[in-house]
Every structure is written in structure tokens, then in C-alpha cells.
Amino acid sequence: MTAARYDDAWDCSPSGSTGGRPPPAGGPCAGALPNVVVIGAMKCGTSALHRYLDRHPQIAMSAPKELNFFFGPDARRHDRAPPGHEDGRHGPVAWAGGNWHRGPAWYARHFPAGVPVRGESSPGYTSPSHPGVARRMAALIPDTRLVYLVRDPVERAISQYRHHRRDGTETRTLEQALLDPDSQYVSRGRYHERVAAFLAHFGRERITIVSTEELLTERRTTLRSIARFVGVDEGLWSGDLERRCHVSWVQGPRPSRRLVDRLAEGLADDAERLRQLAGREFPAWSV
Image 1: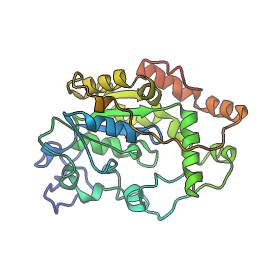
Image 2 (image 1 turned 120 degrees about the vertical axis):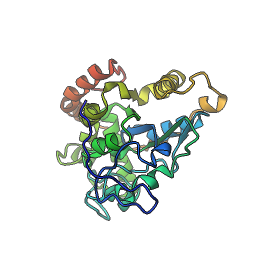
Image 3 (image 1 turned 135 degrees about the vertical axis):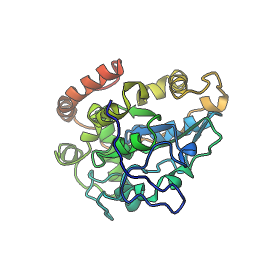
Image 4 (image 1 turned 90 degrees about the horizontal axis):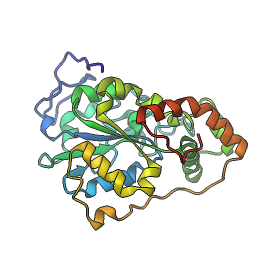
């Protein structure tokens, strides 16, 4: 595990400015900083997981869900990125610029200090567009625990494509879009590649990998496992916790067998490394 390096203090007052530097850990605003972060992945059900976690009486998840604190302001700002290349559809400043420049006092205001576990969920943290997130996160909240939600990477790519088709930001066919080597449709599903920096900064013991398929079919077991990982009472189960959160998968064109095979071939090496890391087979996946 590589320790984060930082040399300059960061003012944690409400008007404090970072100057673009990472802050010292354990500073005056550390008491209300999060100790669990859902780091992705996009189109894997992080919204549902965020709501599930927030239902636990010992966990308070942020509102809004995606604080996007650990990237920007160095990221390129844009009003509209090419389809499949943007970092999300939550507003050009929040996604393209991030909120790092706002400082840790701004970040801490989203979490109640009196709750044992405080968290947020920003799938953009594992975006290939933001390579410095893990380093910044390790500098400010080195003891946090990370939850990485993954999904069949072929299905994830298709879901993102449908999302952009629905919003009118993608005009290409499914095959044209997913086979574009410059788009992020497929690269976002290279989960092991995306989590590598977090492994380097936090170590394996502070990261749990959860699949969307497990959350859907084995919800109680999966949530109890996450509860143990983040350090809350897994026995505090209620009907409200068990009630399924609505997850809306956008409908659209299905891929040909040929396309699925091509995508699976390109993702197979990363999927195998993820299986070894997670110690699970993910049998429902097409890769």
C-alpha cells in the first residue's frame, strides 16, 4: 500500500481554499468526514445501494448522493461531451469540474458527526477521466472503507448506451457505439483496472467488491455482509431495509451474439483478474 504524500496544510474553515493541494488527514474538519464511500461503478445500481445503506439506523448517507468531491478543478470543463465520453449527466460543473476546490469543510457539511458510519456514493471516482481520486481520498480520509459495486460488464455497457439514447446524446447504433475504441462504454467495465489505484492507496482489506446481481438476488445476505464490512450491526434488520429499492433499467435494443462475444473477448482478461481479487466467480456474467 502506497502512503499518500502531501506537504501543505489545507484550511478547513468554511471559506478555506485548497490551492489545488490535498489536505492533511485528521484536520479540524475530520470529525464529520465520511468513513465509507461507494466508488462505483456507473450503471451498476449505486443509487439503490445508497438508499439501502441510508436505511440502516447506524448509517447516514449523503444528500445528494453524488458529491464528486475528489476530482476537479483541474478536470476539463464542458457543457456537453461527446456521447460515451462524458463523466455523467449530473451537470457540467459537478461532473466535469468536480468539487475538490470547495474544500473539506464543504464536504464535511454533508455528513452528521454523531452517526457511527457516514457515507456518499460517487461512481465518477472510478472513471478513467479522474486518475487522481484515490490519492486525494487517501490523503484526506485514509481510514475510510470503500464499496465497489460491479455488474456484468457487457450489460453495464449496454445500459449506459441506452441511457444516452434515451437522453438524445447518442445517435449511433449499439454496435457502432460499443465498438468505438475511444469511448468509455466498455472501458468503464474494466473493473480491476479501475480499482487498481484504490488498492495501491488503501489496501485490499479496506475495499469490498459487491455485484449488482448479488444485490438483486441475495439482497439480505449482501447487505448484511456490507454492514459487517463497514462496522455496523448486521442484526438491525427491518422491513424497511428489506423492501426493494426501485431500480429502473432503461429498455432498448439487444446486442447480437456476435457483438456480445467481441465485447466479452475484450473484457475477459480484466474480468479474470477481478474474479481472483474478489474470490468469486460471478456466474451470471457473460464474460
